[in-house]
Length: 224
Image 1: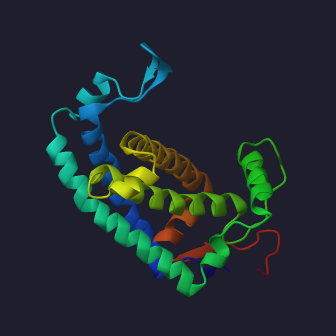
Image 2: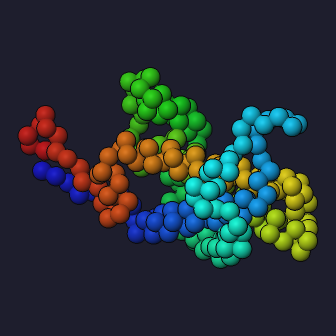
Image 3: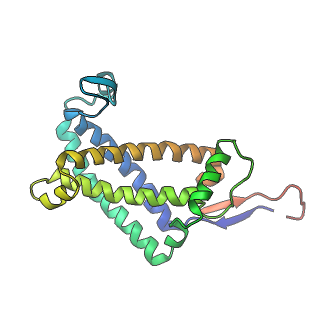
């Protein structure tokens, strides 16, 4: 007989589904801003091995000449991003959810096991629980990245008014580079997260929508 198991509380689902579109808008509006001064590349001196976003990329997405639109969207949604993140952290603290999320001394070893298992290199399945070591490290890292994005974003938004913060972050140029690197980190997290969701299957995905997971009966035991 199928079992319905409660998995994700409403608050976690709310924070998750608010944060996802907000981050998409933040990344998109960030691209509209970055276009006006796309200084980052892989290379040295006058040699460019890779430009992160070539002109064809900008033109295909109709990004050029939308700086004002990008700034207005970015500065509006950053407050929602900050509020949602702050409420999420407060919820994990007061609900005790942080106990499941924070990495422990076994998390990095377990994360390596998860990686090997997911790549098909190892047949040893990692322990099954609410959050495995890889998830603990990933989700905690995203919280730290969120704080970094807010601080670096404020520093490059108001470098004169927040001169002390800007200086603490290594100056305007370095703070802007950190902000860009963090954005690349979000994109990579999104890609890996989506692949993991696809790999985990529909049951795992719908649990983040409904809050419940359907446990299938054990076919080897007809009494379950």
